[in-house]
Amino acid sequence: MQEAIDYLTQREPVFQKIIDTYGLPKIPYRPPGFETLVLLILEQQVSIDSAKATYLKLKTKAGAIAPQTLVDIADEDFRSVGVSRQKTGYIKGLAQIILNNKIELEGFAQKSAEEVRQELIKIKGIGHWTIDVYLMFSLEASDVMPFGDVAVVNTIKELFDIHDKTQMENFALQWAPYRSMATFLLWHHYLNKRGRTIEYIY
Image 1 (cartoon, rainbow, N blue to C red):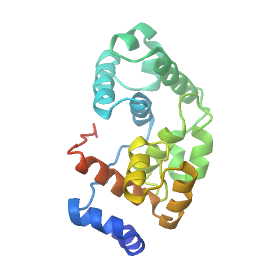
Image 2 (cartoon, helix red, strand yellow; image 1 turned 135 degrees about the horizontal axis):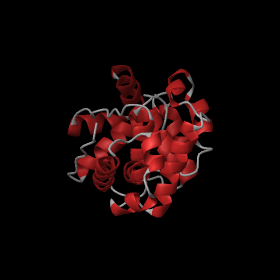
Image 3 (cartoon, rainbow, N blue to C red; image 1 turned 90 degrees about the vertical axis):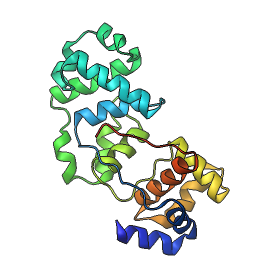
Image 4 (cartoon, rainbow, N blue to C red; image 1 turned 180 degrees about the vertical axis):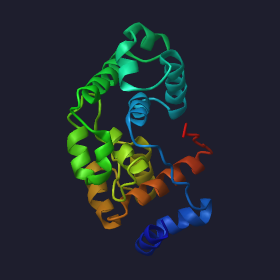
């Protein structure tokens, strides 16, 4: 962590200012595997608190967040705890892929970030934002920046006055190979400036 902080603050004074103002960010970690991917699907386009509440209700209803368990329960049970029809399809589809041994999540730790991305992007309902967050939180990839994340995009606009997505991506290249830490610092600024905190399930 310190190596990444030193690298970024030497190249970008804004990062040092964030640390001076708000302290160091807490780096979130989520265990790799099916449960985290289900949670990330639920987090798509809703608040983390809302997704967490839905996830916990689903876990209570199903008894466990496991591929076979979620394949077996009825779609109506998903909807009864607030999971949309679309996300129910995504979660059941992911579960079936795992049960059919078409993907092995346990093997991702030995693969590059790009290899993991190419496997996950083939699964309906798992896009680049979900993959980026999974790589950062669960596989601890060091050089990921989720440009599909509203908070990241808005913070870059605010701090660097860059509004074009392609220009943002090019600008952020200077933060490689520690773009994940740069993202955590951008999130840290975004949340603290707005007086918000996030409590993850794990």
